Length: 221
Image 1 (cartoon, one colour):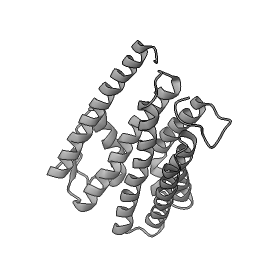
Image 2: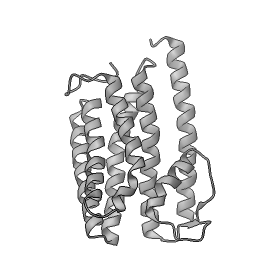
Image 3: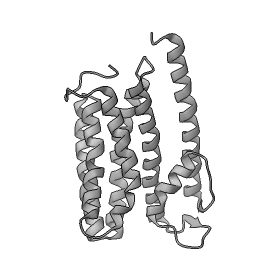
Image 4: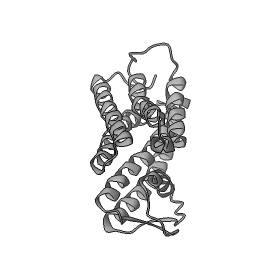
């Protein structure tokens, strides 16, 4: 067992961590639903605002993290609903800020889960993968704040204005240091955070591999 006893029994650790990883992948694939009409934004934000809350309940018994996940998930949902059906500049900013807070909670949960384990287990690898993807999505929200402050913070090589929906793609391209060059940071703050994300992506991979190799070499003792 990687963490303390869970408040929700009956699921294996692999099911818990694997379910979160699957939810994150689905979230990233259906991200565009937040811009559609009708019930689609509501369905998207219900999914988004519950996936980290459920994961927090399943992966830790820390009541403080449970409350933090519930509070930030609720505010993300409310901000998303307002921005989807009565969009405004202020509502968009609230989506970015509440998303950052929401992500910080699950980052704390996954970091504890991943880096306090003493054995190289499947669930640890799944949690570590989820953490990597969450790092990419939190930076998308950070870039959203930067773009909200300065609409010219990012430029497109295709000549169109960069929309906030493109920032998730840009974030993962930066995190993995692919650097396609179709979207570029054009201001100091945008460049600083893009460089910081690239460094985090590289260091995370190095530190995680070092940790896993060390755990394997020590036999999990």
